[in-house]
Length: 527
Image (cartoon, rainbow, N blue to C red; front, side, top):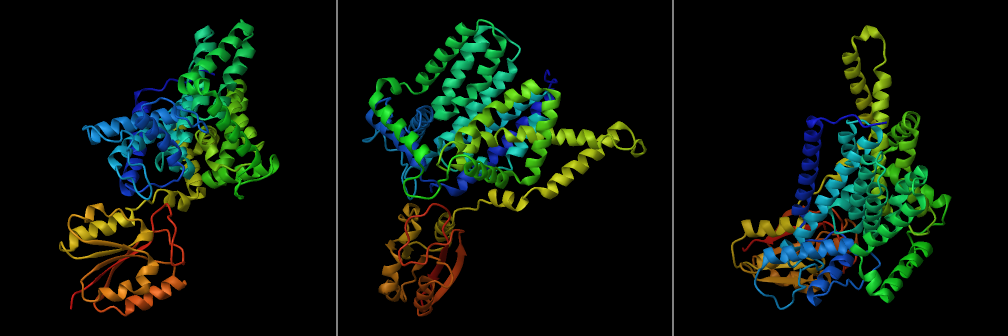
């Protein structure tokens, strides 16, 4: 099956979709900075910052391959140059800290780079589907369907991570494979496939499985098989070492870290939870994860698409399926649960769902001729199929995924700056981990734990005109009742709003939590 030509209108529409996806993610980023959203971000960021600080190219950390780390390092270097071109005492001070980035403009460059990679992965997945199944409409359907995946959305904007880099490389590799499937030269059958496979390994080790369709095609050709097999293996090694050179230059650290990861995947999490038996239990777990991302309707349509594609182009369909099926088989052979390991599958499943949608539209368009001509029947079929799917898609979950409000701490700080005259004291719960730097030039700021506040600090602010930014605990908890009693005793106490989403714990001390914390904003009116 050769791909039908995609005219300029298709590419223009794809560009519009990708730009819109990028704009949405950038808006999410701006609403949450300078607060990080995932602990694992430090695993990439610290290695990159250490490399800048020490002036070395050795990450000295190989639980992840080095390509994502090098990308992060380059982005940090650009961010540092743009943020402060003057000499620094610590070249590795990129401000990638918790509870907030101390240099958000530096980290922003890296976060934007990873957003761009995620959006490009959506486009490349559409290109791969179009080239594999010959339908230009897949250029648009695939990224639109990928937008339903909460997991892919989160991986593409919330933090610096290896999975989105891997999804980008794998989608690009598959697009290249189907673009060159009919070419037989060593360059397209061994050299470039090997390099792309090596880059995939260099983004996340087991994603080297994306080389499986290249290997199957090579075996099916039987042309110069031994020579080209050796060449593809050699080029894979070269591609990997280009992205992770210290796997060879720092072999002891590399072997130790990779051994740790193998034990981690095979043995499960050391602290319990997130672990299951290999085989069927893992398959059921990952199947449940995929169903939760897209809904049963999309999975059913993907099954229809798989059957239709196998009937129309069995060879290309099997080659397309070889990578995600091999990846799923690998994940099911391990004990550890990592739903983010499905990121690359979330980039490919929409291709099959897209084929299924087009198949159902064509079936529906064969309706009675009394309905009208072919164009009219096709339009009605599109409306019926899309309408039915729209009714079955879990829109509430999709809506929640795209509901990213301005961080409550940002909202509270901005309110103080806009509404409160300079000089009035600000009292803030330390558990909220507020970035108080914007306040310091205009207000005296005191940070106190909830325990300190309830131990007498609140009682001492009567008549001071202080502004309070406090933890808003879950209703009915001991902390909530204690706060209510203490605040009720204050003269001139006036609530200004309750903001945030993640209710903090009911204890008097709350450990640092990622996310948008629930807070109470109030002020003491001077009598």
